[in-house]
Length: 319
Image (cartoon, rainbow, N blue to C red):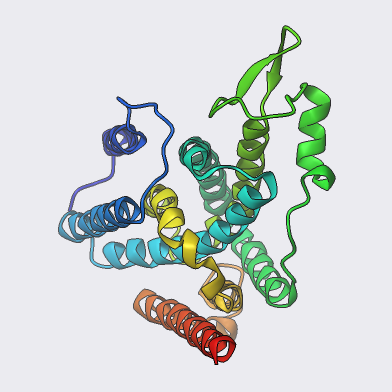
């Protein structure tokens, strides 16, 4: 068995940075629209890399860690789908041209990786020193899942968003886009462009989603390396997944309900799993494989129902 050392962390981060450089098109800064085919290829690449990493874990690490990684990856990837829906609303509200969306997502993902890393580090330390924190995470996930189930998604109103209003108090903002730049000159002074406001809002949105998704992966495993790597692989595929699903977002009307059930299940698992502070009769160990199957089943049913409903509505409208 190979022990995880700081060298493994360093090697993984360097590998991911190299992948991001390739994905960003380090040698081409030209604004362009990401095609459906390109998005599909990159989605397949990121998924394949994640599965290869899982296979490597299965070969080098104790039995079960590969399954924990795949489960955490699936949970994080599924919760990212709801993030994609919100990002689409943000782009619509700010009327961001398709050729500029790619740059926003690339830098948004870089920021998300830094935030996730920091949150995972803090979460791992808290759990290691205060095991009762797992109950706090569990209750939070159940409550969040229930609220998500009954919440109504509304359009983004930039002029009313507190994050945007705060940013505008700190910096002047140009009235129009300046290509794909985040900063420009306004009356001879430094100013943000509307595209920078979009990036800020995307980062703030990811922070909100991370508050749900990071504790959810801790329900699967408390091993920081597994939590971090599963989060990273899911986040890296977010950009290509957005462009792959952007044209079909309206078909996933039941996805939010499915994700809310995933959060409730993961929260319940976290509450029932054996902990030091739990009475013996209250402890129920839910195997990782069972969790993986349950999450996959919930998502599959939600997507199938969404597609069926969309096709039925389309057939009715054309009938």
